[in-house]
Length: 261
Image 1 (cartoon, rainbow, N blue to C red):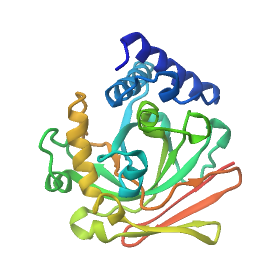
Image 2 (cartoon, helix red, strand yellow):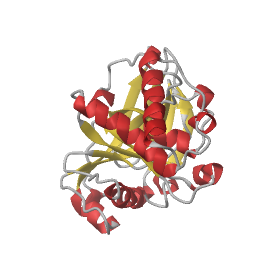
Image 3 (tube, rainbow, N blue to C red):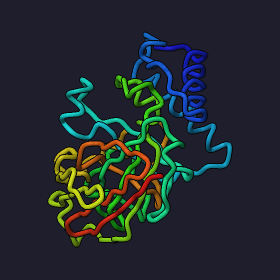
Image 4 (cartoon, helix red, strand yellow):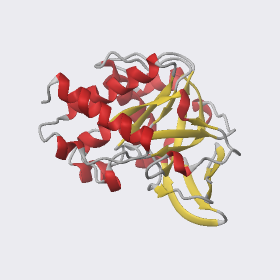
């Protein structure tokens, strides 16, 4: 476990890396004693600083929500990060890749909450009852760690590698669709480059949202009405480069697109 001074130092390293677009060595190398609790506290140091500077919480994201990713990281549960107001991008407006270190996209179902979720004890039924609608979404991820050479503590401290979110126009109430049965196909231009199933996210992405509500409660955080929750990707992550145009088509809920410059 790290000291408070070491946590603050690690937070500054990550914040400067993001601001300067200058990736740093893994925190797991710089601070060999770092653990998961340290990593969440480091992330929260930077989140609090950004909120004090005027940003607001737009929502949250779940990472490591697939069995494959958990095995790769040697963990048995996901992780999470914050989505802030500065991370929201609109369809049709090209995103400048120069703003990021190593931008990638992931295809996800977004949950828009109409009511605040309970914390401890939150169930999948609670999530479905509180969700106003689900939406097609693309998450933009990035790593402030050189070449994505991350361990678990690295990605958690780096706000779960969060960078942005793009929502499509589709709006579907949870009661009107089998969320676990939704599939997604990702196109780059007109070429299909990936496809996946919502069930890849812990068997059903609603389960990931319930896990998140319980997890963040231990840090004094709530998933509130109006928040957008990204439960994890249906597909593998794809590098984003200048000139790339992507479209994700979801069964039953519509599509979402993003372009980069």
